Amino acid sequence: RGGPPGRDIDIELTGPDAAVLKAAAAEVIALVEAVPSVNGIADDLPFGKPELVMQLTPRGAALGFTVDEVGRQIRDAFEGAIARRFADGNDEIAIRISRQTRDQGSTALRNFELKAPSGGFVPLVEVVSLTERQGFSAIRRLAGKTIVSVTADIDTDVVSVSQALEQIREAGLERISAGYGIDYRFAGRELERQKSFEDLRYGVIIALSIIYIILAWVFSSYFLPFAIMLIIPFGVVGAIFGHWLLGFNLTIMSFIALLGLAGILVNDSIILVSRMNERIRQEGEALFEAAAGASRDRLRAVLLTSLTTIGGLVPLMFEKSVQAQFILPMAVTIIFGLGTATLLVLFLVPAFVGIGDDIRRLLVTVFGSHARAGRQPAE
Image (tube, rainbow, N blue to C red; front, top):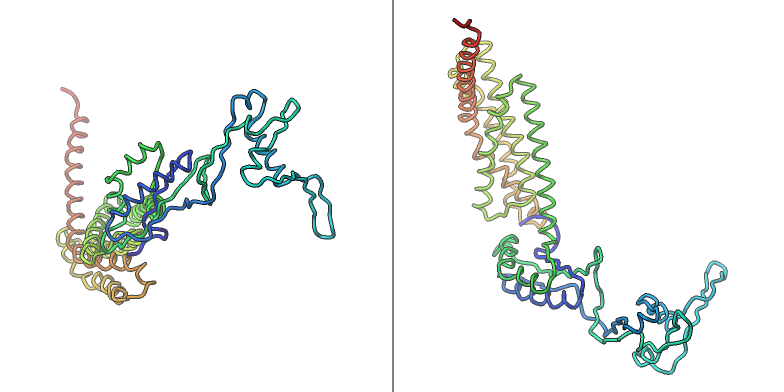
């Protein structure tokens, strides 16, 4: 449910020869057919008309011919070589000169004579060997290699895309690749998902770094931002639980929503920590009393922030339209993430702040005693 566009299964096979790739694609299709709830299986290398394949003979090479030169002479003879172009108003007219023959098809080709580089004419069959084989109507190439894609769709309510691809890999995809001497990769939706997650990873790092810098600047502390941001993993756990409970897959939209969830949880934590600092500085309370008092003071603000967000997203959970299915994972992430972590903010954030204060006092005691010992004169 949800996710980037493209076919669910798209396996790209690459190699030097189209016929080999076609045979390999047939075996890959057999592997894909074994996946439950698969449909629409096909490859993009359909058979076309028969074709003649030319291969230069030793005599042809000795006479100075190349495959490109042979092909050029054949094309000029049967399709016509452009002798002259001239303009006729706004149109351009080309005059082509071609060879006239009574023979048709491969017979005309086999009776064709080539002009040798040294002069004179040589029969085509002495210069190249002609092999007839089944042709293809369209061949895709990339970086000098032929590409064949085996594509299919699956019912993601029965099996996920990642599970289906793993089943295909374990069923013998590596064996087929090694046996035919070809390479493969997962493209389509899987490739788009990998690229999206790669971009999202950098986005998460940048977002968390910016949050930390802002918090460190606001609170004038290097530790308090960590205490505030430690609540984020608890929201992530709640979001994952929500996906599992409702049967949703984790999609790119789910992870984008996690960034929004992190912002809401950090906002709730800021409200709480700011009140703690106020009670410590303005009312002179100890850390424990300030933490308890801040949780009481900010209970309503934290709950209202989370409950209004959850309440606004709950109607989306019951939406059945096709457009809503794409953003449902975002709603699940925020609803269950906030529902899990909201109350934990009131308990865990003060606890994290207290633990950090204890660690700070311990470090001051340890390193402070060492510093004082180092300043004592030696006896």
